Length: 258
Length: 223
Image: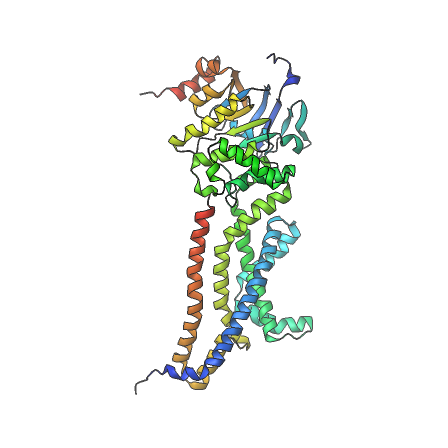
């Protein structure tokens, strides 16, 4: 695919500035164009703004400057000190968080169908039918009536992915979705994401799992100090980085010095 | 001269004690329902309302939390009729006083439980595009109420015991009847012991129930 023109981008992030309070600048003029079908993995040191970037793309954060476009349309802009977010555009984006954030008082099925019913006005019966299908696909059909507290971390995270997919998103955001999991539960969640990737779902994610990053990414962005330091295919950024700061980071992640 | 305990004298007063207990239970139930409803509304308004409403309600809550219930009772019994120019029956005055007290206490319970539904749940709501009404009604409120249930139950048990204070303003509740019998028979040890046992027999299973409910809720709904 020829993806050199910016106006065909799925997500355009222009000169994004984000502060927490007056003294903490997290994003300092960040620019990313994400093409349709891309799977972008954002890596970098903690505090470098990776998770904040995803939260901004999800429309969860106020920004201090810059703008985002989605599918060619204006999505997030600033007006004076206010952040203006187009909530219709936001509906096209799904997000899965590190700590599952399932609704603990609702059964798994109710977790899945709440948003389709309240956001799209879908009937309970139709939403349940779709919910059942997606649970079957994820090997969780038997858990439809269970509550989140009765599930393992891996199962919870797969339900969280299923819940987001119920709304048919055009972009999925994954924010360190395996970081809270016991090691033996990581693979089942990563497999679901790899399957989604194989089906062509555009995604942007933050992960500390470099094996996973290499396997899922079509593009890796190294973010540090609130800006994009290096941006390229996984073989380059993870294998043979051009920038010195990326090289240092990758060396630290992959090599344990005696 | 040894004193012998004789509990049998209480058998003559079972009807009076039953009536006193019934008054105590009626008053407690009424004030639990009214006070908890009031507390719910106040808890919501103090979590979301504008600054003036928050300030006014905060003052009310702190006044009722920070003063003895007995003084609140006296105040409502003697001052409210003077201010409003209306006489209330003992039962109505006691209901107003304990409802206002219960409202202040439970509003803090609700406020804490609302706060305990974390920001992450709101993030999930926003990420799913849920409209504001569904965020509140389907996600935040049900969780806040569930988390509040154990504390609300123990608030209710406390009120059952604290309602004994209404005897001080002449209301014929279990405590008042007990004191009367004790004065008339000059048998305070037997009478007050039996009254205490009656309070305990009702309160103890309820406090046990609070623990059971708490554990059940925790098991089912903790994330």
